[in-house]
Image (cartoon, rainbow, N blue to C red):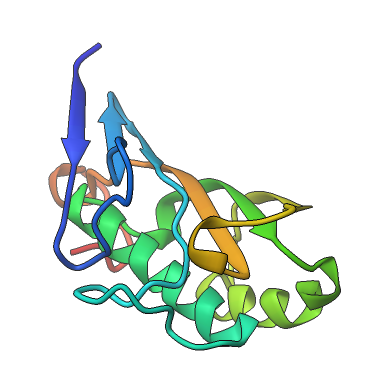
Length: 141
């Protein structure tokens, strides 16, 4: 199966030797995203809410670059440095996945890059709604 490397300036560049995402067949695998603001090396804020929101916005931008969107997410893994912040993270997460959310795992990590509070990675389906015979209401680009 052919591998396609996904890269976009709408999300922070990789901070190591990895790709923002890889598409193979109908699946897209994203790298873990922390709450870095694109174009900077700064976290969106000191709190879990701002970092979670930015991480999800980064993932949305990466999926868009791959020709998909968050509504096609199949599996998410959330890494938290403090499991006590799970309820606050969950509230932000629910804003992005209000209907038919993907399967998810959430674990506590001892530490994350750049002292982030959260990192999220996704596996998503590629969207072929534009070429499909039936209409899709996913709002992909």
